[in-house]
Every structure is written in C-alpha cells, then in structure tokens.
Image 1 (tube, helix red, strand yellow):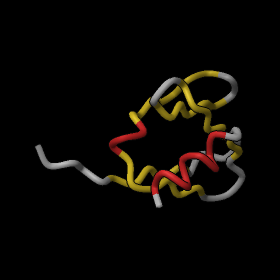
Image 2 (image 1 turned 90 degrees about the horizontal axis):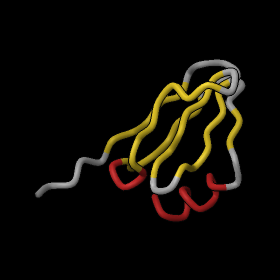
Image 3 (image 1 turned 90 degrees about the vertical axis):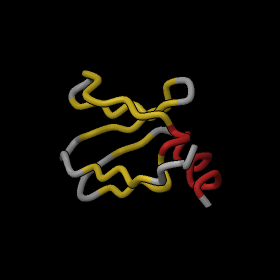
Image 4 (image 1 turned 120 degrees about the vertical axis):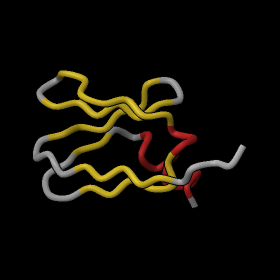
Length: 64
C-alpha cells in the first residue's frame, strides 16, 4: 500500500490542536471538529491564531 502524505491546513481562528492517541484532534470552542490519524499526515500548516498542545513538537520531529 502506498502511504498518502497529506497536509492538514488549519485556517479557523481560535482552533486548538491536540493529540488524541495516534490522531490529531482539531477543536474549536472546546468541541472536537476533526480527527486525523497522525501517520497519514506529512505536515500541518496553521494560519492565524491557532494554538496547539505540546504534542506539536513531537509531530514536527516525526514529520521531519
């Protein structure tokens, strides 16, 4: 199987990225809006006022 290396673009102002197991959870106003498996992502791009938990440094190292 060929791995899909996708980019997650986060453009919603006030969004918060958190790790939930082996997934990235995108939350807006404390409500989960999207969950994406980390292994399917090659990068995450945030525009504007987007916050993230400490998992971002681990994801950055994993993504390369």
